Length: 52
Image (cartoon, rainbow, N blue to C red; front, side, top):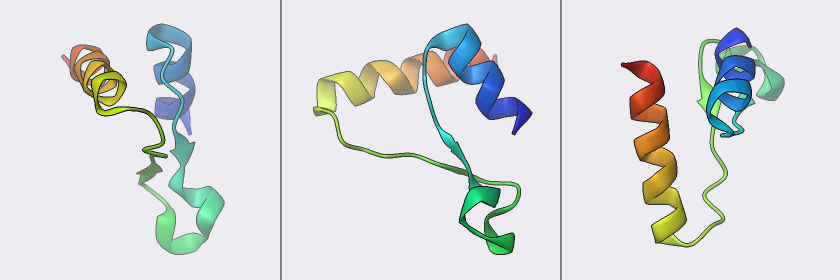
């Protein structure tokens, strides 16, 4: 959950905590890939920067 909150607050990227999808989802995040590939590419770059 903390990772999801930090990611949206610091990078403007929203993901859903996997725990919201049941016990098997704990420790994971869920992405909705609903934007154009160009946008998703920028998001991947933001996430990589956040993880550095």
